[in-house]
Length: 281
Length: 281
Image (tube, rainbow over all chains, first blue to last red; front, side, top):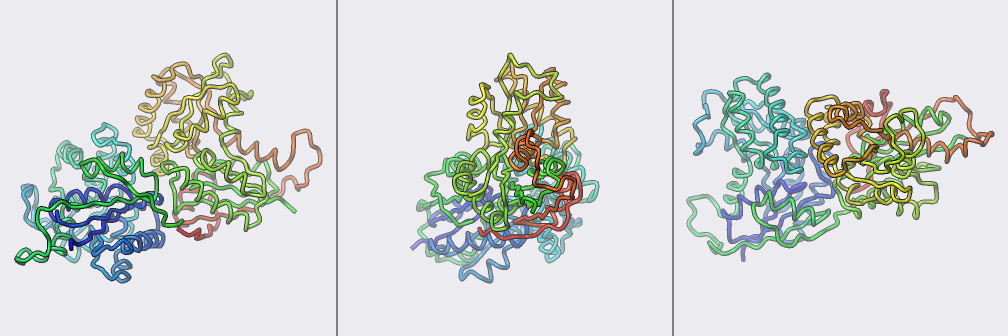
């Protein structure tokens, strides 16, 4: 029996996590829920976000989820504790894996400076206000400078991922951030929408003569989820049929047409049928 | 007994309508509800928007509303029929008054060309997809060209109302619109966020050598609401104490701190206490 891995986000961004997870645990059954009727979470309060996340998780549990990946930085920042204490299954957020990955060796490490433990986190307003990244970084001996970038999600959703306006907005946000934290050498993408503009962020940093090691928490989160499902790397016996095709079921709380159209950019492949569900509200 | 006028929007934008209404009907009791936990409506489906609008209206009715002003273009486009058929009180949207104002004489009319009845409407994606403006314009002998401008609400909410990035986004949207509809001579602000960038829109149009008469549906809607409450202009006896101070009660479904901070830009004066309410969901 393959495990059922539920991946949850307010919208499409979490598909960047699913995209990384599919090749890592190919034999699983996947459920993906985008709570699109109530997105974006990024500008809302803790209380509201926790309520939305709990009702989304309850639905996924009713569909047989064996573990939950909260593939949304805002929900991870503001609702992870409540989800962990309420749900009877393992819950993984995106923040802890992303922060852990900052210090981990990686291929793209030429710009990483271990003597300078300060980290720039780009995220939504709600994630920044929660200071979840500051706490997670402090626990790993890192200092976080958190920068709210409220326009990046709308720009990505407009499809302007390689556009002069997005480049100008990035220039403004990054200049403001670097003026406050001039010595940072690592940048964490603290929102699952941002991997789509990673090339543009890299170009903008080069232009500002401030290249940085960029940590994409989607990749780190997918590896963390793989470890929970498959066990530690040293473990030899896996309960899953390696190489078998995953099955994916997609749910959204609003317009499935839009979900299919936009979602394929995030997943990197066309989406099959999307089921419209009503979580109330 | 003063009338209770309920004004409803997904967020802060409807405060631009309330701002125009306060001096017109100064003796009323006002209720304002911003459904901020579920905003923005602009990218959501008809079904979801109607559900949200109905639950918001039910709350305002329970608070004694004598009439409802739907101060949100998206809800007016997608939920006005359902609200009108469900509620036992008069309901006014923003679209019909805005379109009526297109042909009406007005002070700022030097650029209005009555021989050219085509109108450019800037609005959210959901409003454009509904074609509510096309239908309302056709009923008044006008031809509407509707242009979706999904980035303008986030830019206004970021506070970039007089900013080079917003100017560049406007240039892109207006150039695209004018390429499709080169003869339009009137522009309708089809979203209650847009009055805050009216000066920037005027400057951008001048720069593109295409000045237009700009119709702000907030003003037109306030006048329509005044007529419903006070009767036709010829009516002499008003049931209200003219010149008495209005009382305003503000409700929001999410963070009241943010509502107070952002809302004052839209209302043009500081907001008093905002009450947090839960409409479920």
